[in-house]
Length: 410
Image (cartoon, rainbow, N blue to C red; front, side):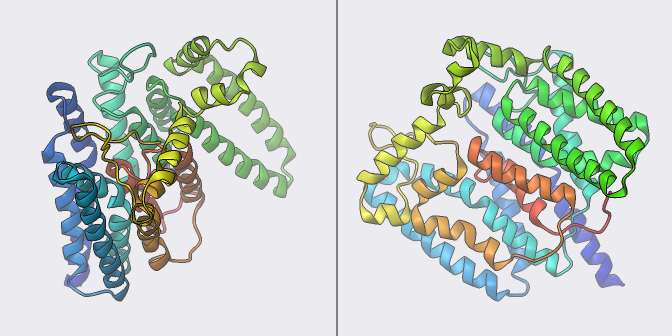
């Protein structure tokens, strides 16, 4: 009994530390806006959280963790050694910081899975909803009060609340969105309306495409599952009423979207590119700029650079330090996570990244909200980035992959 209470309290402590993430992101934002650089305090806090989880896992050795830690530690030493030899000491801190951001996900996932299997960590959906509420609060309320930061420095419109990275916040809202939808399903109508409007307001005020497209994907998935169940039951009356309700809600939603920063930014972008007809969009240049925000061009440039580096850099990775300038600076990232991991950390680094998901994978039946969230992780990591290689977002990816307690909202 006492042992069970200790496990329960330990799980609560871990969640308490996770609940600090929105507040740490706000500190990072104010530091960037006021001081011009990220707060080292936030970096230290996230590092200490990782050390804390590692310390809990070390109370009883796990063979899989020993294997992974050995391989990844050797990789990190070889990578930093190669970077020092190729670029000198000026780039070491930059490379170490990038390593931490990139490999935060596989390490946190490994530690959380071990703690889950030992009964020291439990994932409750209500905790995910509370975490989403904190993010929405720091996004929507400052915007309503007129004290939020702009999503874009110039040209486009949008508000990011008290956060700094539009892509990161958009990714967080997208990943946690499916859990909110199923959570609201079993609550009173006014809670559903308030929760839905808060979430919709959050994704629209940002002014960026990713969270809105993720929202549409999410809604489509839920509608497909819902109507499929009705078709199996052959409940034609409910199907007709539901279809009419869906059409009306869709029309209302589009009327709201047309007044949002999201739609205005699309118009601004299309006018900037000189696109006046739909067929004008279907060129590589326009697709690259409008859909991928020039990520295909960055991918092409990085691939050409990758072909020129030595064999050892292809295996270990060429890092992110740009040696083409006199002072240390970060190389332009592709912002498509799979390619960023491969090109900047090589074949060995890519294997180290995916290895924990092979070692700690637990075959189980995933619920609908988990499935949609994981699909969004896979899609957004490819199209927009900032999902797998950003600690603020990747810690949520790790939590999504950890089995949930059976409090499923059907």
